[in-house]
Image (tube, rainbow, N blue to C red; front, top):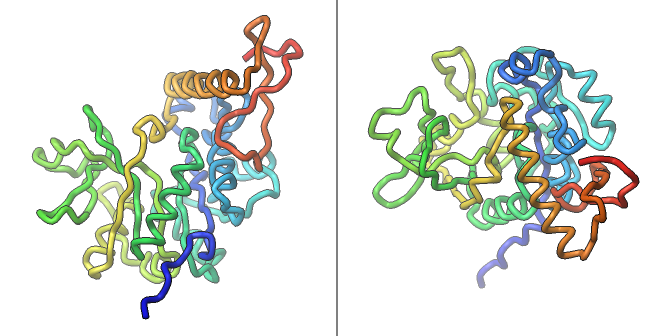
Length: 294
C-alpha cells in the first residue's frame, strides 16, 4: 500500500529573513546610513512586507538575521519574530549559517527570503513550500524568464532539465550569460539537511559565501533541486532610491486593484496606509482617508 502524500499543512515550516546588510549603495545615494530593510515603501518597512507574506502563508515561526543597525531593526519590527545576529557581513550563505544555533531543532521546511524584496506575495511563498514538500527536495527555488537577465544568477540545467547549479553574473561564462532563466531569490530548504551541510559552502572571489552555493552541494550529493516559476515583478529588490520608487508604484497599483475590488471610493485621491506585521496579505491595506497623503 502506498503511503499518502504528505500535506504541506502537516509539515513544520519556518521562515528566515536576511536583514543584516548595510545597503551601502542605497545609503550612498540617499545620503544617510539607515538600515535598508527599514526603508519604507508607502509608510511600511521593506522587511514588514516580507514578514507579512510569510505569516499570510501560515508561517509564524520567523527569524530575522540582523547585523548592521540591529537595534533599530529590532525596535521597528518588534517581538513578532525571533532574531539571530550576523556580526560580519560575509554574504547570504554566511548569514544563514548564523541562524544554525537558533534553528538547530527545526526539522521541516525552511523558507529563506531577503528583507529588501517586498513584492513577493503569500501565494508564492505557499507555492514554493508546497512544491518543496511534494518533491522531497533538498533545495527548492523560484525562477523566472527575463528578456534582460543581466545581474541575476542564471539557472543551469542538464539535458534532462534538472538543475545543476546557479552561475552568478560575475562568474558566469559568456555562454551562461545567454541563459534567460534566473534565480528569483526565494528558497525552501530541508532545514536539517541545510544546517548539516552549510559548512560545505565555498568562499567566492570576494571572500563571501553565497547561499546559492548550496545548490552545488545538493547536486554533488545527488539530492534533488526543485524549482517553481514566479512572476518576475515579485523578484524586484531595492538597492537604490529609484528602485524604491519603482516598488512603491507597483504597490500602489496593487492597492488600486484591491480598492476597486472592494469598491472603495476615494473622493480626493488620497488615502492613509496602515499595516501590522501579522497582516493577512502582502499588499498594504487601504484605510479611511483622514487627510494623509499616499
